[in-house]
Length: 168
Image 1 (cartoon, helix red, strand yellow):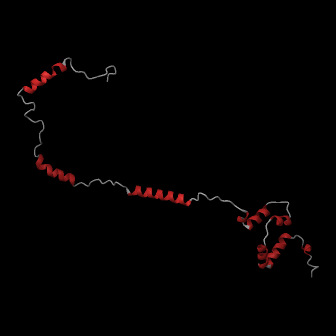
Image 2 (cartoon, rainbow, N blue to C red):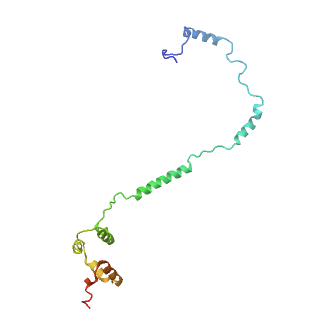
Image 3 (tube, rainbow, N blue to C red):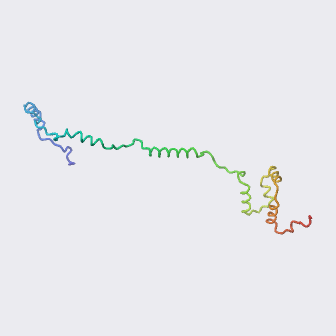
């Protein structure tokens, strides 16, 4: 396309001046505008073989495309269900606040055993709460002899400190 020309299509000079006269002259002629011989012809035996060709095309298996594919629907439903379970299962307002009462006694004992403090057992006893129920529970549970011997063997280095001779 030529960029210099605004209109690339041109009509011959004086075309529209004589157009109406030429059109009227052609319309007034007795000559038929349509040719007598048709340019379109039907092939030989077309209509005799048409039914057989049509039946051959109709007997083929049609291609079926599902409007709603089941796999896509199941995948979408599974993803929506997973999101719903996650959303409903997540507790939005719960904040885990740990208290002293949440700690197990074994955890507290392990902490004191593993860390060295300059505290005596009396100072530790003053810091820890001690209720009457804990004291009564301790008195009600029987202490086995094996446990006493294990405690004494772990905590006392010299058996003479026990003064077993004097009490007999």
